[in-house]
Length: 336
Image (cartoon, rainbow, N blue to C red; front, side, top):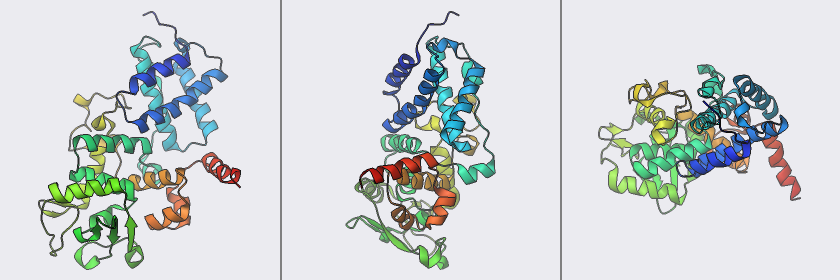
């Protein structure tokens, strides 16, 4: 097969132009950012024709990106998974050798590293929520994902909410510790608080309550905000929803793992957690906290809303790199 010569910048612009019609804006921005590092690396290495990319060159980029970017293992995996999608697209226009994308290596993430480091990336969350708004609007899955991402609440906290805890006039949710009726909060009475919710979140909640919420009570006569036909939504149901809706192929994205949906064991409803990209509820919280911090929301505000101390945020939740933190501090100092 004869390769068609193409320079990195031209390939990048063509790729972005094609993606503009098929992915969410946040996903597009993330691809621009991640592939921008590839352009920088190509310029440093005087690579003017992507026909010259090889497996060992891609491994060289991986090591350069890891060392230059202060990346966590999970962030490195995200970077390389995006690169794999780009390389596969290059194959489709005869710009690189066929099957080169199979030589893009990503780090393996163990379950322990998953529980400690993995988070739902902001662009993936936006793409997922955009899909749910369009195709599953005000469904229980949509409401669950919306609350987990926009409120930074724990799974147990959103499950504990009753209809009366939602105040559409004040646009707020009230969290109550009620262990005697199966809805304890992790921090008990100290976890009780009122949090504000945005107008967009309220619109989803209003339509859920008015149009789609099953009118049921739980085993204690309470009216749960998140309910099924059988009563208050279960923890296992929430967990399964999260795994289901965070599979890229289920919200209109290409599979970053080079799998065919027709024979993928994770594609059905029975084993969504088998997808390497799917996440449980807690990465929603970790990703949302990091997203708010990256958006310059003060740590004290994030701490109060998420009901977690600053020390715990620093140790377990904040996935910003040291360079990101430095640049944010610079932004504040430049205004002094």
